[in-house]
Amino acid sequence: MENKLENLGERLFGGDFMKRNSFLFVLIVALVFLLSGCVDFLSGSFSGGKTGSINGKIITHERDPIKGATVSVAEKTSTTNQEGLFQIEELKVGEYIVVISHEEYATKTLELYVEESSNSLGKIKLTKAEGDSQIELSDISPELTILKFNQNRWQMIFAVYEPGEIEISEESRIVTPKGETLNLQNPHTNRWSIWWNISSINSGEYIFDIKFKNGTNKSFSVNIENEDFEIELPTLISPENGGIIGTLNPIFKFELPKEPEGNRLRIGKKEASTSEDEWILLPTDEYKFTLTDEFELEEGKQYKWTVQPAYSSFYRGQILISKRAKAPYFYFTVEDLD
Image 1 (cartoon, helix red, strand yellow):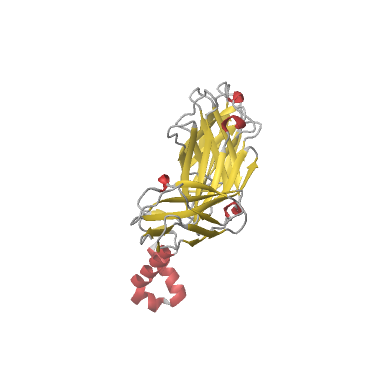
Image 2 (cartoon, rainbow, N blue to C red):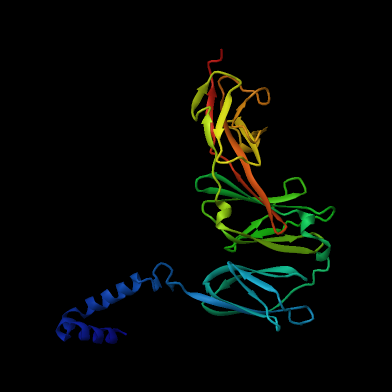
């Protein structure tokens, strides 16, 4: 290798230069090679956008091929052919979650590390979803709410409801367009949900992978577009942020970019958790509200307030999508009561 580099140097700079500076030339070439991104110096392995592919065959327990199964990895999908074969190419080297779904079979998820070149998953068996046909999407009422609460901050809220006496399993989860998994939680009701805070737009296909304790499964997806994240924030006016008021019945004033489908005032003590906020229903066509006895203020205490309008709700397929906004809190102090 060193001789080849010296020969290259002689062609470029002449023999006299290489006799005096051969080591320097080899060192320069090595540095250029490292800085070009071809080698990851810290990990000691090649980088520079290495990719691989995955392939396999989807079959039944009777070893028959399954045609029309969808194999999803990150934002890429493939549908099995007549022989149950699939292939997905140009996956960056790394860890992935593979989701395999078919309307007649229970959805299956796999975790794998994609190596450079071809990665065979072999034969993958799907189990017939015998009880799946008994559970319709309308039975679990899937919801996805997109709440914007700062200029570059959103909260995505995924939720489903237990269908009668059929209990949802703790293995139920959401798979994001980038392959991240969000486990649904059930605090004390029949509603299973997860709140996911993000600082950039995450459009693409979201998969609801819902599992039930009776062994059945329901998997479905919804595509979220960039414009679904385009939500305008309310503007809070008074009480001003950091202001002092001398009344127990302040008038809250704000502005909304458009008339909402619903609106609520949120108010609570400054040091309390936002989950302890008092929610007060507001008229949709009025942008001010006088606080009466619905929430009792105390002299010398600090409070926070905001408004949270619901701008639109619509169905995409059978999934209810809601777009909401919440202005950053304003804080005020009650002092100098008359």
